Image 1 (cartoon, rainbow, N blue to C red):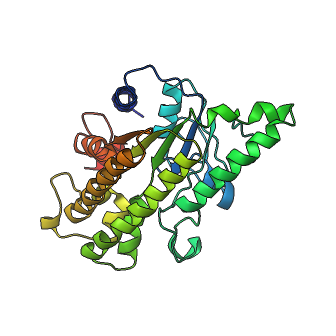
Image 2: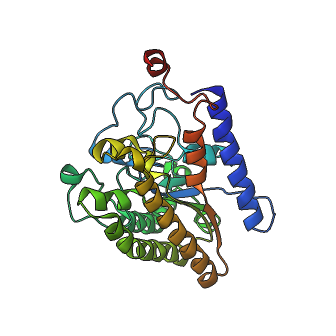
Image 3: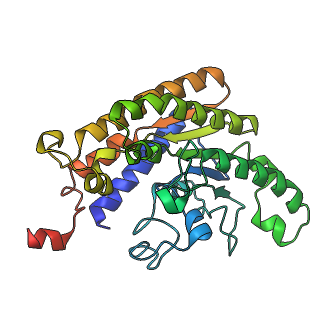
Length: 308
């Protein structure tokens, strides 16, 4: 990862951290734990623990070997944890060497908000959808209290009861709900038509976490779908449908529509949960800027440039 790209990621974390401080009234935050829900954008080892380690080149640049992340280095959730002085989050499903005293990560690569009526081998989507992740969180919260009472190592490896109400709850999910429709040969209008149901299920989980005592929420919108290589490879577009940076405009328009509706859902949640602090983070804008200014941040493949 280039120096400029690292600086860019740090800028993202710092700016979003400042946003969080504003939302909670300007007071200094001191989260003792983070609980994350999501897909491959924030999976730190969940899918690898369940279905086998993510193979190289995943993990090669920072961890120097596969480390459960579907990335060559760290994820945004890693930088968020680091910004609050917390260790990287262990995946809830990873039973080997994990320490959950500072939180847990329920995300798995390929997860969706809505359960998919298919298997992972058929579609590539994780069976651990958001409703399952929420159930895992509830069980984790309940069992942690009783297991810690055993003392010894159990007390050291699980969060204190009061950490749950004072934790930061992060969500980065929804991208796969959009791609799932296209895999079923849905039209763009058909994909848009089921987005309200996706967000309805998402809002129910937020309310569920709130019912378990969660009060501070950090919600990422979805990134520019039309810039994902696998979307461009699987669904070729005509030149007229591509933007100047090589992204498919129809897919990006769907992502923007999803984000618009997600933002409306967040605003409604703020009204319904007045004691909650909910931050909506525009990840789409940040990722699209990174893609559209790739050379500025030295984010390119030198071998490709030499061939070009």
